[in-house]
Image (cartoon, rainbow, N blue to C red; front, side, top):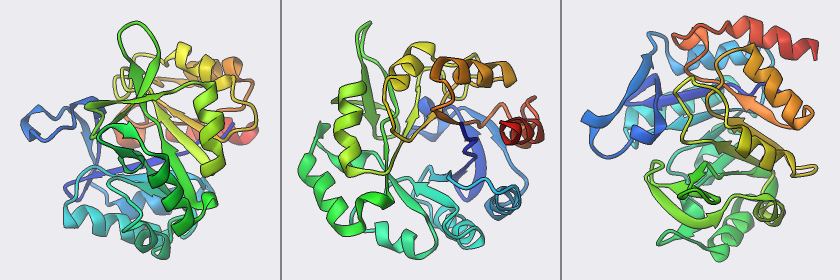
Length: 255
């Protein structure tokens, strides 16, 4: 189990938002925290603590957001992944700026339908070992989990289950999976989704959503026998929450 930290950037600022509110209407955006420090500050922090594998997410296509992201990649070369509007056309630009991986979500769908040709084309361009697939998801009705795209507003046809993940692992190095219904709310983890993820043998998966305290981290560890990595946003004290960043780092280092 590893702690994979995050840097979410919106309008050139490091923010923590409730992701499901991030749509085209800015007045509906629910923001938990806006940092008075730059993205570079957080990249430096993670570099000093040797927390490789964290991710930068560009929450809009603002030029200041992109510049903050690129500056952060250069501070911690090959230590951070990056996502947010990435496609086969712009992926290499961010890899050349220092990203260890590119994070792809909407880029593998056409009209909300999974498109294996687009994924294979991406692999041909950047290589399987440089790709993280973001399959952030929520339940559709009371049935299965399905991947969401377009700022988590639109359901796709791709079910998130063991069979899907094992099939897609042929085309990527890792997975990043937010439980959208609990993400940013600090109300506890999605145990049902975690049990599904725990059934994926030998796959690198980072879970996000709902972590409030060390007890939630211990619950993930118990459910997944230490196989699943995790990320925390709004709950951390560095992002305005109550959970000590240093305590999380020390806990994982002891493990």
